[in-house]
Length: 558
Image 1 (cartoon, rainbow, N blue to C red):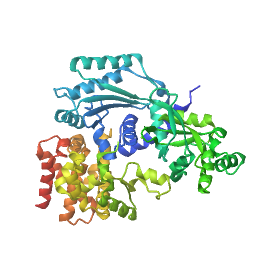
Image 2: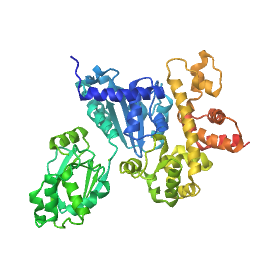
Image 3: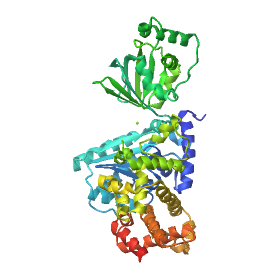
Image 4: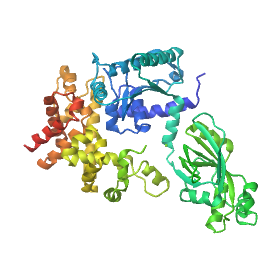
């Protein structure tokens, strides 16, 4: 009889999403779609950047994706079984060696004989930037590594350290971790709680991922900390408030009566669970990130009733327990057994800029929500502070500035692609946002969305195992079947060319009056193709090069 448990259920749910991604983006297998899913939902990379992160197809040298964060580079390999029965198979030695072989070719002084454009692009990053830290990351929906695979992993790391002095870190994301990511995606009401306490002591810990503390605090401090978020603080609770039953009336009466100072002894406390707990011992304040009350709903609501009635005594104290973990399995079991009831980017310093505050309000009036702060939409929507927006109408501040610069500011357009972090230099960003408004942002964003559809069409056709002429039909180019691959490769710059083509569209709009919007995109692609071919650079380099942007701008203006 086939085994059917938790991982089989999650496999089916995730596979369904991967099939959609595979179809929408033209990936050749589920593992490539899995890479897209993971990068989008866990690493939080947007669609066009994912295309540059994934080292797709022939010439990837065993590396599926690469991310760079300052002086650190992470190399990924993704494995998602094509059949449910294969999820219990162990990762083999070949998989491990394949990724380490890719690392060696990526960092070698000698250029590999076979390498695709994205692979070569990251080799250039290593040559130009100081990369001090490398991490090998296996993301697999499998249960374990075989012993030969583990041996190979240790041997390769030791060999690299002996020959180069580099200490390679490695990370394994397996079934359990993938299921936690999926659970986190479904949990929308993530909130933070800040509260003062009277006493707090470290309690029972299980390694780094499960910690706990026990203490006591003022009932008034607790209610004031939770008051604005009462609708979501019990998100992981089995039971919500049950009204004025005998138990709850007893809690209320103690909190407002003569025995209020004995509340700690008469009634149970509360249990709160969180992703992360920060303790400021100097002023005895806790910050609980991703917090939820999993035991004590009746207590808190009874105390809140007393607080709202103006009768809650100042001398009411209660016990509380904090459990800190990101393990969703454990969180669920804790809730069940108690039977009760997560890097701010540099760009976010702009959050309080008056132009940005005004822009956010104007965009809301036009049907868009722009997140000034990380996860602001989910946070406010969970508290019923804002209406629901569809995904395409939720904008990230960093992406807004990047697209705006590429579309309206020729002098910063290449910089927006080459190193978007440079846009947030204080002097530059002040110039950028001084003229920004909702109308301009929406216009540029709508063009970017239209262009993204065409770029996705190109990638889908290029990945297809059969001749797929949809892209050539769109740009109105006749291609013989024998020339299909050669002609398709002439447009490979589109893999990284989103912003250079967008900038060309913006400049064409100033000079031309086409009757059909597609004509702007087709003309912009043609101009970009010409500039890339004459640049004598790798396409991935050309699409970030200021001289190429200038050449296209000159062609249009002439």
